[in-house]
Image (cartoon, rainbow, N blue to C red; front, side):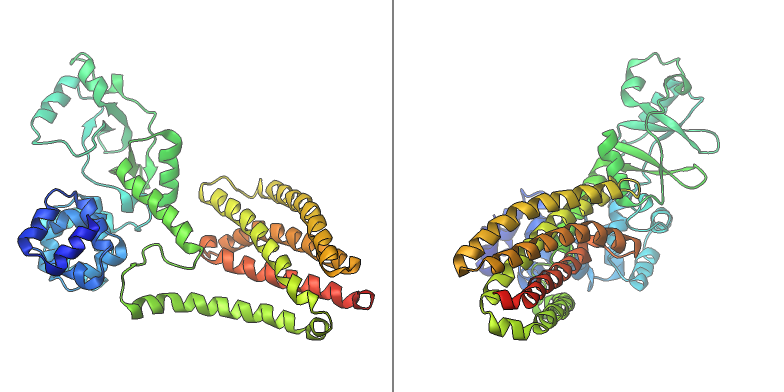
Length: 441
């Protein structure tokens, strides 16, 4: 489909483009837009047959912001007014504060007030995820009254599996299952059938913790309350899926120092600027490792074999440390690592590093002895490898913990710090031991 559309955008007519897009779901069109170079993306976006309001929620932040930057506030307001509240808020949060105010002023008063309620909360919080389109019933109502109330509505909010139950002060009390509403006698009251199994989520709870709650409790939807316990909205599973995907993308892209919202087909200068900082940081750490090697220049000149074997120590340490680092970062992300169990995890990883160190140091030492016909050289590289594997495990646990306490994202910075540590310790241990025992080689 992408290849076909690509050719049609180059040589086809608007009618042919419209025919291709007609059967595509908005999410599929969003994927296509993200997969096109900028000039073709702009051409497709300007197609009059395109339902922009349905596509915008599915686009990544970077692409969405780029497509909307030249749109008039009145047009953005018109598009947003047809969206679900949570989707509209996601779109607005990609715009500058100045443009957001202009868009809000161009809206109808009722929609303006609805969006202002959600924009008050941070983007990556339960309040930022929630939708305020909810159905509430009072605890003293009968099922007959509830059914009469529902029949008067034109339609129910999407993904409505429960009705939120509140008291006279709009405090959340529980939920009424749709199945209970339909299968019980109409004279029963909501209070008799209320379920309190679904606990309310605080509006300021971080989004990743919301996703964890949905996973652990198999929720389809959940109420959101403010600090006073007043019901302010609900979160549905489709919002949580977006959070889970964003978290996965963040951890994957963070390993390379990239933002998960980076536009694959952004202009060359934009992409260059985004990557330059991380390359600069890596260059600085590389010079640091080179400086350590330079301290043993005389040793390297005398024993050329050291230069051949040196990458083995650093590489093994880097891989072992990355294994530990990945496990720890994942554990922190899903809330399985705390101050209480961190010491146990550290002891376990150190024990694993010692066992792996003994096994692989023996193998590497034997290979080095046979290769260079030197028992001393084999013992040196074996010892250095054990030291580096041990330090790699120690760093793999401590680095993400310390970065997290310093309010630095471990997924983004952990890999660079770990590589620097394992390189420096590996080179220093190997070349330092070689310098001490040089006369015996």
